[in-house]
Length: 262
Ligand code: BTN
Image 1 (cartoon, protein in one colour):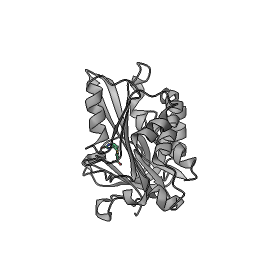
Image 2 (tube, rainbow, N blue to C red):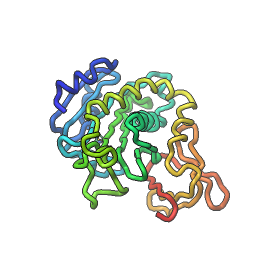
Image 3 (cartoon, protein in one colour):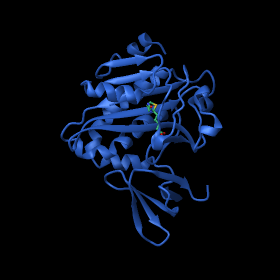
């Protein structure tokens, strides 16, 4: 994916500015620095390779050259959107899942930020915010998607089984990275008005992995909780009907979610 092809693919989208890097430490770090310099709404950072890609919970994110989609989209929330930013990971997840579904991949969202197909992780989302006093001035939505088989991390880096579009669609049937990126961004722009509507929660719930099934949740170093994954609260928190008959709300944070017994 060279810069010219990328710009041509995104030409018709109402984005802000684009910064493309053949190699960068982390597109989220670039986007956060750019946000501090005043980057506008829907500015975009794309890299062909990251040397220090980051995931949630301080994990490394594997982004070798020529094989993965790694990008960060800046969002300047409107005053109307600001109270709903805990839903942003869900909005981004829906945009990625819809793009994958349009290529025939039955994508699901593993709460809060992983995109799965048949139980294997295909993509991860890392939302980071820049605060100005007590309001979010800018949200950086970082997305990494395994496209070619070479982008799947080595086994020792994996916290979940992982796969790539190439593993699922087969060699020769993989859409170019810039087209997948365009689809995701187009979906995000089209779906953005949902952020302030409960319809977003309903669509997110419809794609939740293990919805209505027995799961196990570990928060920080607390003992695992077991129960039925009941759905989502209006702010995007996870609802668990635990084994004592209580409905428990699980907030975003240091959470590990697994199917029971896995
Ligand atoms: C996760 O699964 O824990 C989230 C992974 C997010 C990775 C993307 S790749 C583009 C952007 N830049 C980063 O350093 N991280 C995100």
